Image (cartoon, rainbow, N blue to C red; front, side):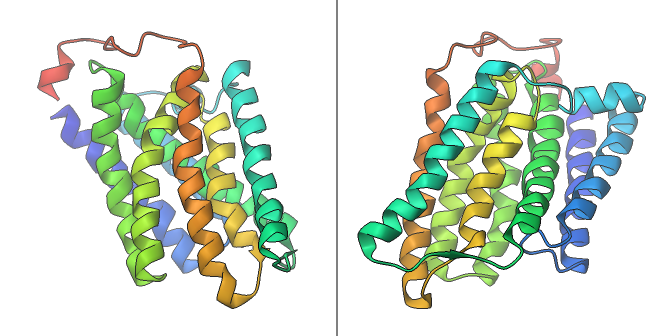
Length: 252
């Protein structure tokens, strides 16, 4: 019964995130601050329904508290390295590179929408609840299913080959993002930053149309692999052990 409640809460939160983004036409973070705020409010309400936590407790449980420094430095340094790969690749390939008009505003919007909102829903809410009574890998594997399913919509928005690779990236990222969440002390902030960089950087750069697909493909492959380096960091908690009440591992 608890598992049903968790996935019902996930569905409600995803609908708030997805429908608000579509209604506002916020595909590159144009209205990301509003989408992010709506999602956070909805998550606090759902957390109260699921776990009877008051707003302050719900916000902390959802991962909105301060992160641990180790995971923060990993995501900051890793993100800088990833971003630097774009101009390096364009220089080697002889491509003209520029940024979209208003890129700084779009970057804030992508961080709020693709970073904070998505990490709150999929790590702060879904993965955290699934982690109770389950090992890290079991909880992350279960959480991967809806995270991948919601990315199926990409097949209607971009070229099939890019959509297929993007789907693989979504599956691959589920595990390192969950690990970052735990190593950050159950805080979404480092993962939100990295998630926004991975999702947003390719949306903010402008290259000749005939070269974009190749650049995007390279970017997707690199960002699918690089975040796994988080597993080289010392564990903040033993990932092989279930959290919470072990009795929930089989009872839902």
